[in-house]
Image 1: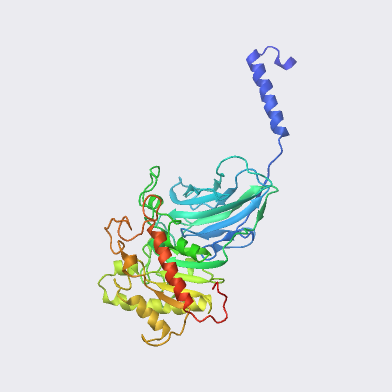
Image 2: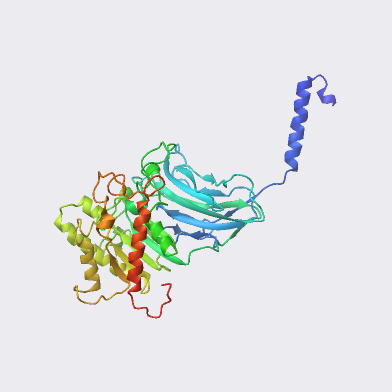
Length: 433
């Protein structure tokens, strides 16, 4: 204590307290961490809307609202951390996306993704330490993103709308466990802004002040999610606003199917240059033609072009998924491509593929044409209608405050699809098929 002679009592007390704090910190155990790369086999990724790489710098990349991953883990007391590669790390953060997550199946929590976001803390609900000996679950999903930001040619650069996941961080000693509750079937679901969940929550929460896509859109309130539940599927939702068979979508996305030009087709790519895989798919649903009709209204050539695109895609998807997968070419809910422009194009493309006249037998009994008709089209036929079904005339309401039209339409489609499957000769398949 000779070194403190002459010091005032307050300084002596502060020095003593600081020494105690330093000693306490030195006695605390060092908490290290383990980063689970996207290639970790215990992590399940929605299989056909993430582009995943392997190796020490493995990553998982997606541009689709509704893309998700699931895992279980144990040996953890604190919250998991989600590590990202930011789209623009040097600039001030600009929000372009929201994700949602759930720990232990509690309600979804929404978090913003900014252009410079690198790490997110996935705090459990209710907050507090996790039981270290228990098995916990985690699900993370892209909830919405800006349709106009780059989704195709440079989605992970400045003004890009992609999510690039580096991994999930757990505490040292914690381990990932494969989910034991995955649905047995797999669905691939194609569509436009309706499938993406645009305007599904017409009246977002009052605390959502950023506006536009990041407030009004919801990937969880879609017809695709309802169909996947009905078919007991883990699903890959591929929806791009403004996209059509022959017209490109927001963010630079190329048309669904450009005959003779795979590089200018989006059905087969997650984004430009990132090939989509097609293994292990039980059901494919596609709802396109709304934007072909809205953007090429009154153009006679659009009927022929959409017909050709549909015909070519049906051939291509069958080659990609194999003979056993059920494929459902479905008229969009507003009747586009059937009763609405491009009038009759979907059925014409289907008939060309099947090689049939109205009285002949189809060549492919596992490719189906479904039109839900006027009952589905109500309130969804043109912009400007504010109704029970829609807050804008094209996009169905997703629910929560008002009607859950997306879910109702998904139920209607699931029933029609089930009846179509039931009419197919069984070829030795199990009843669950």
